[in-house]
Image (cartoon, rainbow, N blue to C red; front, side, top):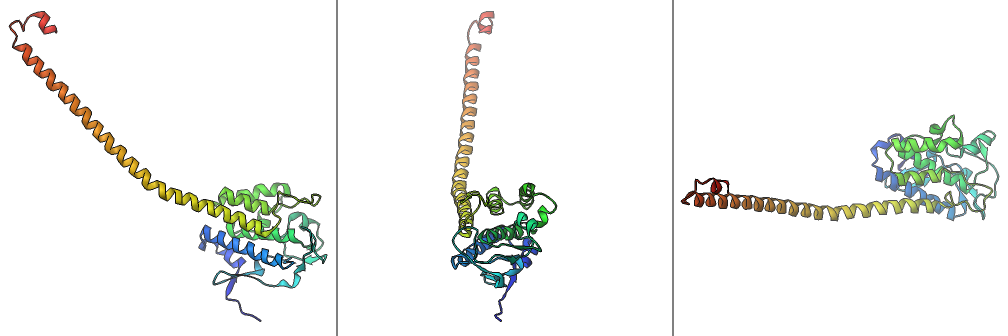
Amino acid sequence: LEFINGRTLTDLARTHRQLTFHQKLDLIERLARAFHRLHACNLVFGDASANNILIEAEGGVRFVDLAGAKELTKGHGRTRSSINLVTPGFIPQTAEDSAAAKAIRTNLATDLYALAGNAFLLLTGRSEADVRSGTSSRDAAKLWDHALRQAFVPGGIRAIVLKGLRVPDERAEVDRRVYSTAEAFADDLDAWKTRQRQKRSALAFGLPALVCVCALAVVAMIGWQKYEEERAAHAVRVLEDLRRQVEQLPNATAPGVAEL
């Protein structure tokens, strides 16, 4: 047996506070791309629970317990095999409810759902099944969104995870409301991180400029205040000089002159 120096995703989720938010996102993106490589080999994992995913000390993603892996054929939801035993909590609720003894038909869609379920576990420290326990599938999305909000997950990432947890419409040939590949899931994560980096770069560039503008504004305001004070002082000096001149007039005490 090969020794893998790593920890299961379950262990990482239990100590999820030890990872920063961006470390979690990087790990989820690596996991999504690992799923895509597996699917590119025409295989689906089938039982992609957090216990069956190891994260190496160097950050690599390893799938273990692949005995239930299936060969993927053309089409979003078809495999050559029919039934596979899976771990509850990483499959859609509709499949869980209808599956006898938790045996369901695994396909690409169940792998993508498990990917989003593992992402939810890393971000919140709770499994999506625990959060939606006892509720209908219609209300599950609201509970998932609330749990992600409580974990301070930004709206863009919440939308990606919730899209991954949406069950595809089997009646539609192409359901654009769900992810068709794990690569698309990873690309959306990467695009969100790129936008955040651009915002931080713009802020890093704009902040010094804003400070300079504020400093110039303060200097200008102080200069204008000094100018106004000098104008007022000059007006007082002119008035006092006029009063002295009036006092020297022969008729300075005349009522009209005093009034003037």
